[in-house]
Amino acid sequence: MRLLVPNSVLEEMKQRARNPHARCESGGLLLGFRKPDAIQVTRLTYPSRWDKATPVLFMRSALGHRMTALRAWKASGGAVDWVGEWHTHPFASSNPSSVDLRSWRKLAKHSRRPMAFIIAGGSDLFAGVQSPNRANITCLTSLELDESYELFA
Image (tube, rainbow, N blue to C red; front, side, top):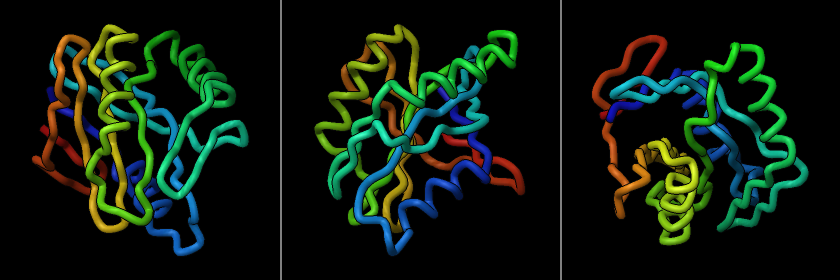
């Protein structure tokens, strides 16, 4: 499975992780398209007032994010989908925690489709895809980068 992400989306995540005023993690949904062997991210949702964030935890509330995803889905005639989630680790590396891994398995199982997950750390980035029928996430590495997109595989 491959993951294609616009540089602008990745940069937004990285800026949130590097923000010297950020005291807490932040995150949201990844929206985009599903292809037979790839997930293409087109945009993300931003933290909302209903989310819970601490220096070591981000818990996304359905409120706010759901409406943004629904509007994108309707505007695209049902083509844009919730394809994953992102969050930051502003004070640590981008390595997923055991809480992250458990949550991702649960989300992929619930959706019954592969889901992409990205963590922007203070100085690095983690990208992976969790399949609903696998116990472990598939870690992805950057395969190609151009002026618009980064391809992970």
